[in-house]
Image (tube, rainbow, N blue to C red; front, side, top):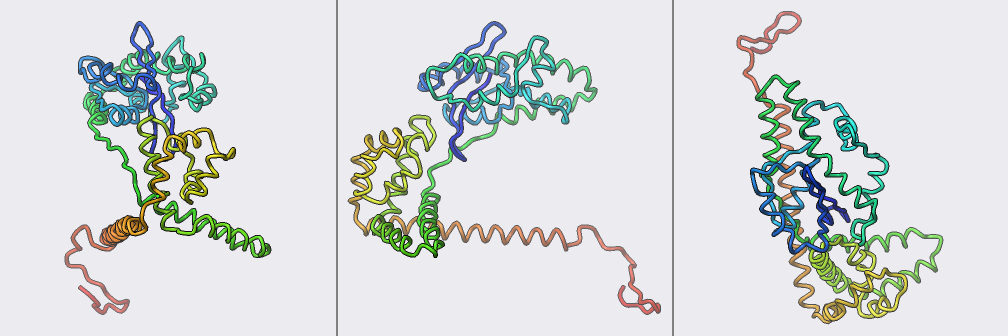
Length: 360
């Protein structure tokens, strides 16, 4: 079994294909079309302890299955873990393992890298993508058989083999938690963007006239920083919600640059609606959520101030907690460096060069 996914930022990875191979056929499930039915289709098979589920480096795959579909896997076997058990120094890439253990198998590494980063969200998939997807799971059954045969032939210690299977099973018991939208993260991001613009401008000392014009332009665009910051966070939260609903990356819903521009207010919103400089996806987001965005700009200043104060108080609490955590870490480090771990020598004395007893 294998899963094809794509990454869009530090914490979003999305399943777009699931490949399952049996000894008789290879199956490819289009998750984008079948998302609502995936759990119904696969749950009985994945959770059945009598059916072996073979993955290659399946830790992330188990995470996505649990996060997106609440699916757990029992009787899990990881080809990469087994290969590393045999020899930790060898090339354990899937193409190399196929070439080493499967007589008829060959997977070009360069081609694999190209196809890995190809646009898996676009439909229809190309023939090359379909073939690559099928190949990724096709050889896993044969690899498991070959690896286990080699392990039992070369390993005398039965307990180490038992430990191998226990490590694989332990991976399936991990509990994964979806990262929630963090308002504080976008509070800080807005500040960085806002300050960043001013820094760039103030560094251009030789262009004083242009500097003053740009400063005026920014002041005109963001007359009320708190209001813009509040709008930025709320629109970011809306973007996050839509991304999760559609199983897409944040930038595929609305680019962060356009998000920052949108936060500047109604005048900028009108400009962006007619702008040719933003992406089609950005236009689509604005059109679909126009009423919500317009309502955000009408929220009272008192409500905005209250919301931002709550976020800032969270920041202070987190900062205090982080300081205390670092303090405790430093104390532990100092203890480890300077506190004696074993008893001192008995009857130990320190003498001066002339034989005078200094300490005992």
